[in-house]
Structure formats: C-alpha cells, structure tokens
Length: 363
Image (cartoon, rainbow, N blue to C red):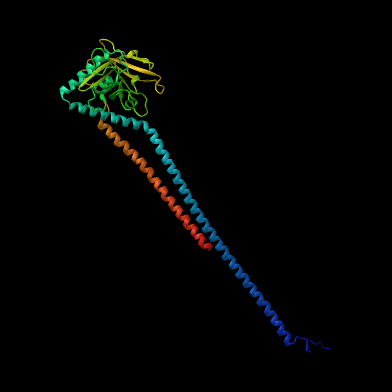
C-alpha cells in the first residue's frame, strides 16, 4: 500500500513542499550572508575606531610633549634669568670695593690736578701772601694755651687760610712707600675723611717752620677707599711730604706709636721742632686705637720723587674699561630677560589658542 504525502500518491514530496523547502533554505543562506556582512562591517568599524583612537592618542601625546617642552624651556629661561641676576649681583658685590676705591681715587687725582692748576694761575706775590698768612697762623697757634678749643673767630681764620679754591683743600700729601697721593682738606669731618685726608684743627698748618707740629688724619681699611690703608707698613727712615702752593715739605719718620683715641700727648708742639704726624685707626676692623707715624723735617731730596701715583689720564682709561665691562654684563642679562618675556608671551598665546580650540570641539 502506497503512503500519501500531502495528497500525493508518490513516495516523493510534492511540488509545493519542495518550494517551501527551497524558500526556507534561501532565507537561511540569505540570513547567513547578512550576518557575515554585518560582522565584516562591525570589524571594519571597530578597526576604524581603533585607528582613530590611536591617532587621537598620538596627537594628544604629541601635544602634551610639545607643552612639556615649552614648559621646560620656560623653566630653563627662568632659571637662566635668575642665575644671571644672581651673577650680576655677585659680580657687583665683589667688584664694589674695587670700583668704589677706583671712583674715590679718580676724584682724588682730579682734586689734586685742579689744585695744582689753580696754584699755577696765582702770581708769585699772591702765593707768598698766602704762605705768610699760614706762618702767622702757626705762630699764634703755638702761643695759644687752649689750641684744641678754637673760638668761632679762630675757626673762621683757620678755614680761610690756604683755601685757594674755596673747596677747603689746602694741599696734598704723598707717601712713596705705599704709593699714596691724597688731597688734604681743612678739618676732620666724616665727609672729608671718607674721600681724602683731613688736617686736624688745633695743629699747625703743613707749611713747616720752627715750633710747628702739623697733624693729618685719614681712614684705614675702608671698603670704598684706600686712603691711608698701609700706613702701618711705614718704617723709621721712610719719608712723606706735603705739597702746598709751590712748596714741598719733606719729613722723615722717626717715631711710630699706638695710643688710645683720647691720648693727644704725642701731638704737642715742641719749641724749635718742625714735626708732622700722620694718624689712622688701628687695628683693621677694630679701630680701638690710633696709629701715629711722626716725622721730622728734612731737606727735600735732590732727586725728585719718581713714585708712580694715580693720574687723571690713567684713571679715565680704567674708568672706560670698567664701565664697558659692566655695560656688557648688564646687556647680557637684559637680552636673557627679554627672551624670557617673549617666550612667556608665546606660551601664554598658545595656551589661549588651545583653550579656544578645545571649546570649539566640545561645542
């Protein structure tokens, strides 16, 4: 007996069954192909997303590296600028004593040169009249029992005597052993002693003569000026000289002593003696005592003093060299500071631009 399949008497499926089976198979393969295409598309999208992420990370890394480099450069500029400022400060601090001493010596040399020039403009009679007035002052002083306390009138007479320039300078002193050449001013005020030597009021004017004792004072060990620094190097037999108007008065060291500031016994005027004393503070940095270097008058040497002292021309050349060096150093520092300022502005502008770009992307 034959079995029926959906109304068909044969043993094979009928046409409708085959069509249904074919449709089902086609749908299966079509679904499989769509799945493969979807998976392929997903893989492609994933690959593109990965590449985009890598590119983004690489871009961010490059940008961060660039920013880090800029920050490093900016920090380096700051460190260089600070180093330059400290270097200039250190150089100025180290050079201050030398520069200040040079400055004072230059003014001292010009003061002496100006004094000599104005002296040469005076007539012989004018010079002699001034010298006579100085000798008369010394004679009156020697007879004064209280010469350390001058009256207003006596002080006025003192300040006017030998003041040919109106600046208070009465001459200059030379000390060959320590190569010192200093203008000598009336009085020992601090303003005078900071830049030159001062004549001690109450002592004889440095024009020589019997029964006189001229006393000149000056600082030692100042960081800003040499002045009488090195006076302790003088020995008995050494000489120093005063130059007043056209006259030179030479003294030979015969006594060196250290006394308390209040001890003025060694500054007394002795009858018939022609003395001169140089005074400075001692010891260096302590200044608790006074060093007194006394000399007695001797004839001027037949051979002129050949010691090389500071002259205006030499000091001007040194000035040009020092100023040129300082200008170069300061210019170098200014260039670095300008570069730092410019770099800072560029970094700031880049940050502003990056901020705007980031805001635009988020929008």
